[in-house]
Image (cartoon, rainbow, N blue to C red; front, side, top):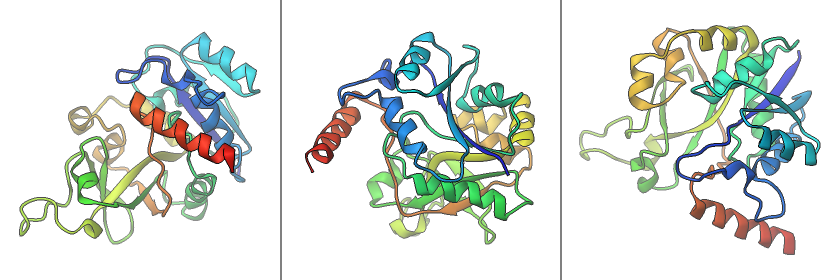
Length: 248
């Protein structure tokens, strides 16, 4: 079974301009993500899909295959669908470009979920929360699942709602969604051809398109959580961690 990991990397970013090309560590931010992804064992290769020649040029400096795609895409998933449309691949893993500390084992685990569960067309990952503040944070997505580990719903709001505690209850009752997905190729092409759905537009969560159209999403639970880089402050903290690692 042919497995491909794809990193969608767009140049513009509202909260942190040009973040994927930030280079305070000596490496581009997207390069860190790419190198982590290359440590995974199941994907045959890792590619970058972008909308800007600057990212293509940067990728060339560290030997990554980079594919130019349309600037009109509204999501990373749409960008990936264009990039792989003519490729001979069975499973496509969607990695966020701004997660330079992603655990390679999580990539393999996610791909294995689809290998082991042929009835599913899409899978993703979740993890426990560390504190109630994270649960309440709308920038951290929550997911609830059924008894078969299929996603019931994703939301920026704390779900499930704890009625007795008027909102956020025990942290152990919540699951944090991680922004990594695996798709069977044909399903990826089919789902991105569908129009945006009402809940997808409201929550600004593209995975809700699958839920609203009746397609189950398998959710695997992992322990390691890496925060994405959304702001200059988060990037500065990442740079500090990298410097500590370099001194070991």
